[in-house]
Image (cartoon, rainbow, N blue to C red; front, side, top):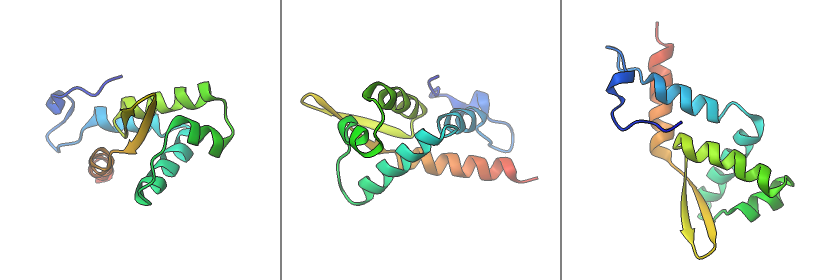
Amino acid sequence: MRIRKDRSAYEDQSGIDYELIATVSDALAHPVRLRLFRYIMQMNREMKSVCTKDLVAEFNYAQATISQHMKKLVRSGLVETKKEEKFAYYYVNLGVLAHYIEAARRFSVL
């Protein structure tokens, strides 16, 4: 599921972005994806590049499993890829994460 550029159709008068909350929550709903996301965030903070082979070595999952989980994180917008030669490197998109946190905060206010 791609997040549409025109999000206003999914926001109500309180400015809650329901599609963003649903998409990102779905991407973070699996323990493996949470661990992958956290690891990428930590490595990015340390200014270290992360590619699929690094994730396979760190988590001892099959490359296909890692790729499927990363595909979901990338589609949510939480993770971006940058291709260099034959490798794709992963970077956390802190803007989407911040928007998600703000939307979830607005959602939880009664």
